[in-house]
Image (cartoon, rainbow, N blue to C red; front, top):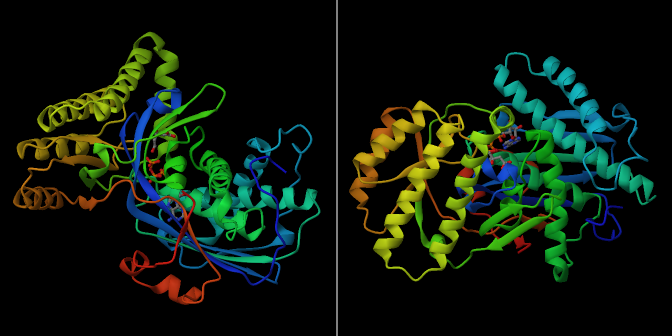
Length: 434
Ligand SMILES: Nc1ncnc2c1ncn2[C@@H]1O[C@H](COP(=O)(O)OP(=O)(O)OP(=O)(O)O)[C@@H](O)[C@H]1O
Ligand SMILES: C[C@@](O)(CCO)CC(=O)[O-]
């Protein structure tokens, strides 16, 4: 068993869990963070929710209504006979590329047949989400079988979300964290009643969520799943050996800051955008490396600014400058979009500063709402951007990370699938792994 999974308590059939994990905003450092630079990121109030029930039959069911699926995807366990070719060579707990390729091939074949009539983009989103599930499920099943601790069981999984999908707010990471948590719980690799071990449980969840993110994104930095797991406000840097350096910025000035998130609804895909930046870096290292360094310096400057005891005016003036600088540098990496520049233009007319957030190429912009901004101004901005077909959210930053409710007494599976999204947000009783 990988060192990142805790000892296994006895497993029970017919267990029910509800898991939820937040999306994120990257304030500074997206893209550069993939190449070892620092980013500053925070959880947001919008979350994904996963309902999981273990059952006696050999059936696995995964229902992804947010991706336009009208029926659950389902498999018999006997259908999933993948050879673990990399079993002996593979370092325990590292990403299994061979399994990933097989799962991807299997999923593409299955989903092309099953969801005809859906748009190509939805099909690709479903294929990616199902691949992430199968990859994690099969890897954890294999570990359980190797340890001869495996009790046979089937799974019913349903996933809902209040996050826009593919908009730069970390929907994939919050899905990955929910999946990893639900599967670790169902295999008994983590135990919800063990509240003394929150930190190592969260690290284990983050480790497996990163693998799901690798299926979804190719070469993620890990910042999104780390924020979705731990919540709060973080400075995140990934060392060259993959070691994570995380500084908790909770309680800093950033936490009380209000933001407007404006979703252009222009679809884009993080995997492609990250790959394009890598191509640019390889082609023009002497030009692109200094851009990545400049982005890194913005993150570092901001973290120092949070710690300096400067006046509110100085803080705001510099914060706004950093937002503008970071946006332009991201544009120079080729991850901007005319719609994002349009949002900057509209918000600037009202004295507000915005930048793209997340992978860019469409998706969301982040607008800083300083303390003196009038409600009337916010209202005006909302009207102007909605006239262009964009969505707007005002959201809190720095809330909790992954949360779990065991043995649901209150919600059944049908209720979970049909309840209003606003009601999902009102569910209480979470155990958070902070
Ligand atoms: N609610 C969900 N249910 C199932 N899969 C989801 C869900 N939300 C996201 N995903 C998966 O994550 C993919 C979106 O990932 P992508 O990285 O492009 O967007 P994002 O995470 O919203 O943006 P960013 O990485 O820039 O923050 C989808 O294609 C889908 O496979
Ligand atoms: C673009 C990127 O920096 C952030 C996506 O939310 C990719 C990553 O860090 O994995």
